[in-house]
Image 1 (cartoon, rainbow, N blue to C red):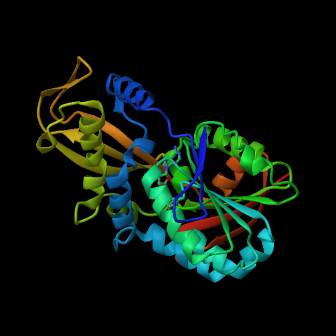
Image 2: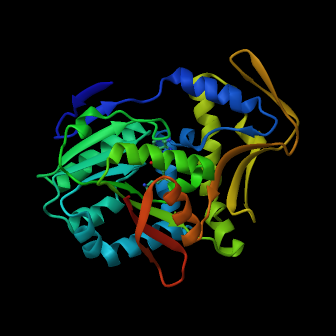
Length: 325
Ligand SMILES: C[S@@+](CC[C@H](N)C(=O)[O-])C[C@H]1O[C@@H](n2cnc3c(N)ncnc32)[C@H](O)[C@@H]1O
């Protein structure tokens, strides 16, 4: 682990970014499976993070504005529940939503932002630190699906630790991975910790599908940027003109997102030939949707006790507050 202070700010950076070889290994393995699939965490290089931010502003992408509205409505109530705890945000991205909480918590002392996208993380933390001069801001560049050992945070004794996980990013994990992730989170929080987590609700596919395949093609550009990243960082030769994008709701309870080969073709990576048939798909993401009781049942398996849950009037999105038992 490397730790240093970011120039021009009070940010402390812990750089646990997975090495390039891990990216190479996971991409090669994923491209050689019968159903080609690459983990969603690799979508977020600098360009990917920018495209995701653009998705958040789309009319079709109801998730961001709905979660923000719930946070704004409930900020005072949440601040009372959180007390003077330290906020640890997973997948912090632009750190936009946490600002709503911090504005309701003028006494907050420490904010820990954790994200795999290093540059975006640093830029977001720098901007947040500027807006909150008294706040200690700790940036951790890491993969949150791996168990984390964070000595800096663990040295902050006697503080209630609150994990904040907005954006329904939990939906990118398979349900069995959700329980393991929540158990890892529980271990990090220790016995008096709590979790504030945004979870997208099940709803009509007429609302869900456009959210993940918008009319301007930004969701498609976001997925296809993964191929550009693999070409640039790993030296592959994907021809971007020969791939498309598709997203649909599978009634098991998830949106499935795929890059689609537009013809029979062969891609080369590290001396390996990767054949694609016409219409063959490469999965980039699953996004699971949960009813309130379904998500509470998963969280309970990981040792969390549901305390409060807030939804919007249209029942599009849920925000759960859970405490460790
Ligand atoms: C769906 S975006 C959500 C961003 C923001 N929290 C929001 O609510 O709008 C997911 C964020 O999590 C980060 N991320 C995705 N997978 C990750 C992983 N395995 N470890 C750490 N960060 C990850 C991405 O870089 C991105 O910033």
